[in-house]
Length: 150
Image: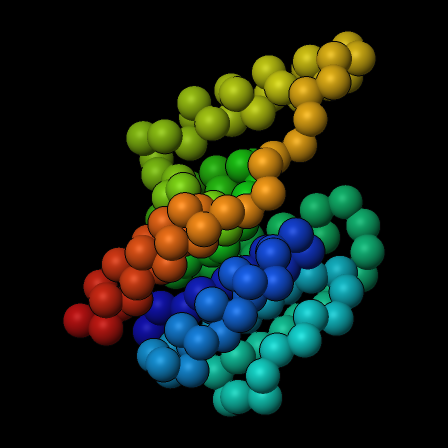
């Protein structure tokens, strides 16, 4: 049975709530992994794993556990690339489904922006999560869950 893994360190609360409702509705296993305690409802299929603080420790734990066909919720492009290489799916909290066809371009953009920031250019952060992104996330999640139910 497929599982849903959440890179919970930077997962917005509203997305976490959407995921918990989906877990309750479907009965699939949803696991939140972070370097801090993540409050989740007490359900047999909803888990929270706290890993030690440190660079990419939560990401590495997700990569270690994910299997083909699983879904990973993350905005971390390198993590998305790793899980896609394991034949899992990756979905950002903004509703962007990362695929084998799109991930390399996203990595290039990420690396370019990182180079800009390291050279002193102020790039700003992402815009606040809006209704459109929340709706797109819910739609992509529902598509995955519908396929998983078959």
